[in-house]
Amino acid sequence: MESQDIRKAGLKVTLPRVKILEILEILEASEHKHVTAEDVYRALLSKEEEIGLATVYRVLTQFEAAGLVERHHFEGGQSVFELDQGHHHDHIVCLQCGRVEEFMDQTIEDCQSKIAKKRGFEISEHSLTIYGTCVKEKCQYREK
Amino acid sequence: MESQDIRKAGLKVTLPRVKILEILEILEASEHKHVTAEDVYRALLSKEEEIGLATVYRVLTQFEAAGLVERHHFEGGQSVFELDQGHHHDHIVCLQCGRVEEFMDQTIEDCQSKIAKKRGFEISEHSLTIYGTCVKEKCQYREK
DNA sequence: CTAGTTGCAAATCATTTGCACTTGC
DNA sequence: GCAAGTGCAAATGATTTGCAACTAG
Image (tube, rainbow over all chains, first blue to last red; front, side, top):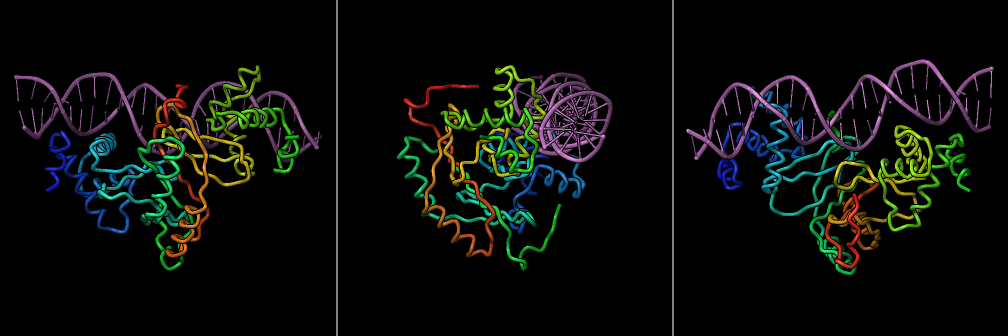
């Protein structure tokens, strides 16, 4: 019941918010869970929902602040959002097809903590993204 | 002699290009070698150089293509440039004062290659940035 | 009822581009 | 001399904001 999450975030349970969270949850289960605000907006349109792009941006930003959603800045301008799955992970992005895979490597995490500690930095977050080209078999869908 | 680098990049040796490269070289030696296009533009203005912001953007982009300069996308919108020092490194950024330190960890690099290989990705580049707060003693200059 | 939300249009910010005017080579 | 480069103003694209009209609690 996603309305609980919205309420818990201190936000009113409104149609736009419910619909947007719904979209994100559907995408979460798909191959294509990393989306731009524009993507969400188009998904809403295709479901006949009359929700403005400005609202999509506002809601995604509020969801981010509430920890429901994560925002990433991959190469290429637009912000990319995904539902917060609770567990940290990094990304590997195919520059040809845009496909995004997730990974998490404890050795890397540990190294980062060590580096930060050695330099007297208190880590608040970090972002690691590998860009490359994925194998032909997987690199099929050429979107955008 | 920086004009050599410009010529080698297949670009005409013009005043704006020389001046911009000069600025970047001076900054390179300083504590503050990661700069926005706007920063470079202001540095030029303070040296009485009449160079337009559009040109700064154009030149930085050309320098990037030529491998003279690296462009990073830290949090906060603007692109950040630095002279290409020839050796890869990652960044650790203080969210309070904006200070940037560089680091490079072979273990992390190796892990990344391993991960990419396992997933059939051919790495073309990667970006790792740690965000945090640095120790009080170093976190002095509150710029911008 | 009323503070929080939304939609829309206009504003903003970083960056890019069109074009007439220079300037290296 | 002429292609390449520049300045400026206008265009762009992503995101944000002002504000009057709505709606959840």
